[in-house]
Length: 68
Ligand SMILES: [Zn+2]
Image (tube, rainbow, N blue to C red; front, side, top):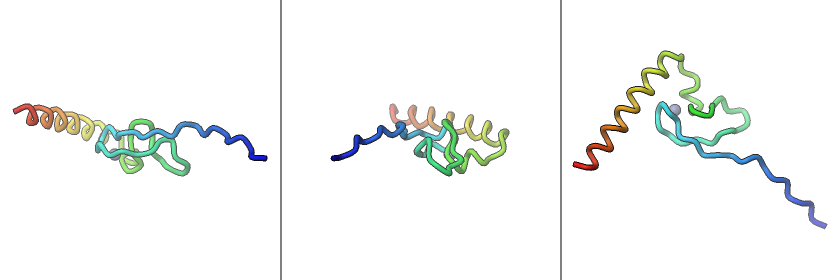
């Protein structure tokens, strides 16, 4: 008889708040956090803050350009 498949905890695809890449969280052995991909999670906090701000600006500008 087949064993009941155990429900896996939902792995979710996240978008990194810094670089905008998508990543899976949580993932075993990965340093990624809920908001940052593995490579950005490694950055010093003040780097991340600045990059997040710039990233937001770029996304805002991209949205504006699309409506032109
Ligand atoms: Zn990232």
